Image (cartoon, rainbow, N blue to C red):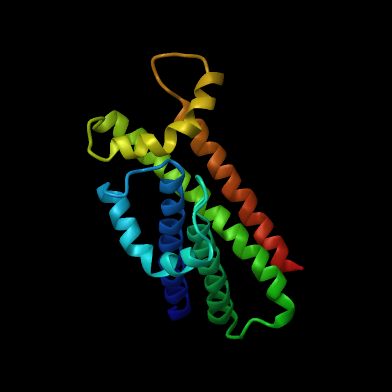
Amino acid sequence: MFGDISSFLLDTVFTLFGAALIARAWLHAVRMHPFNPVARVIYQATNWLVMPLRKLLPARGVVDGASLLAAWLTALVYMFLTWLLVLGLVMPISALGAAVLVSFLTVVRWAFNLLVWVTLAQAILSWVNPLAPIMPLLQTLTDPLLEPIRRILPRGGIDFSPLVLVVLGQCAVMVITRISYAIFAL
């Protein structure tokens, strides 16, 4: 019972922090103003890890390499702690290569989960409260991904592009999760 609770808490903390790091990179990619209230919260929560890495890996164009590296390092620590918690063992050197690959896949899974949640929030708010203060931020994040889908779907009274993006994102999460399990089954 305590193992399940601690595993849940570990997963929750690392997933939220990893998502914040990916959100930081995403905000950088869409050139969100750093004084946006949501962006400020994300920057303040992640600065302690990203800023030292930024000295090694400065941002280039739309790619915030320091935030992505921080997300990968977070996923790697998450892998080691999960291994320790679930199996009660320190990860052997022979599993290090698989852990590096699975931690990369974990970052990709976190990114797709974040995409799904941001798209859902934007879609729900567009119906419930389209003038919500967070809507411009959500639209800035999702519109570059929704536009290609909108060009393919027929125009109508209801925009189904968020639904398509959520379904594609969830499919990607399922595939990545299955691949991650297959790697550690070797």
